[in-house]
Amino acid sequence: MKTPSNEELFQFFRNIKNNPKAIIGIAVCLFFLDAVFLLRGQLSQIGRSIVEARKLKTEYQTASTDIKFAPTYEKRLEDLSVEQAVLESQIPSEGSMPALLEAISKFADVSSVKILRISPVSDPQALLKALTVKGKNGEERIFRQKISLTARSGFHQLGRFVALLENAPQFFDIRSVEIRTDEQDFVRQIITMIVEVVVRKG
Image 1 (cartoon, rainbow, N blue to C red):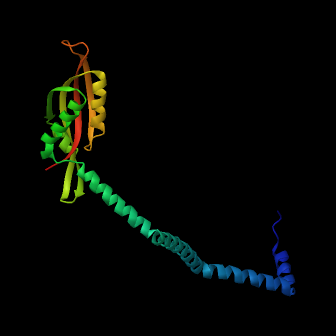
Image 2 (image 1 turned 90 degrees about the vertical axis):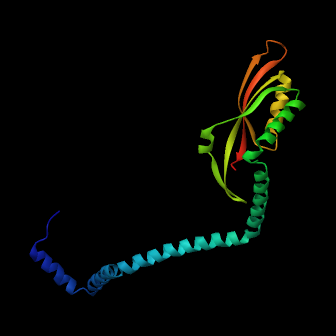
Image 3 (image 1 turned 180 degrees about the vertical axis):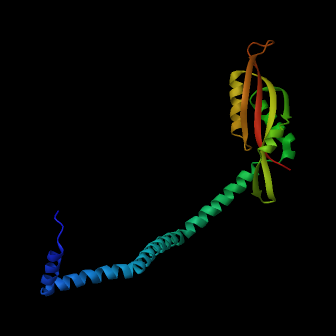
């Protein structure tokens, strides 16, 4: 590209001087550039205001929806409170362990399973993993208490016994089962089980 000489530049500006349209065009360009530099701060502020307005509009729409569904939320909260009370009633205290052992024994009797030995298992790690929740009496710790039991049973009777445990009002969970043949009665088996039940500390 050829670089214009000084004489050519002077001639160009002389021609512009005699051309009103070119002068108006240059003036408009200069005004536009000046306006951009002067108004740049104000334009950015307007942009931020638009973004903020959109955010407020979204929050308003969300709040309007929440207000519209407030009765539904209140009903759901009531249902959850009732459900929480029912679940809390299904979690016995640690002191009711004899009653829990008796419940397991009754399930065994109904299923024709003969319990040979049953006892709680001390597990310090269970307390370390305890879950702290807010109950009616303040904060409570909920943990899993292990129960070891040995029983004599047939397979069908064992199936009924396990079904009763899993459908009990309390939260029983069978963690391990070991089955071996009973040397005195080959029709039956000796079952060793570890059952966990959810209890409240205190």
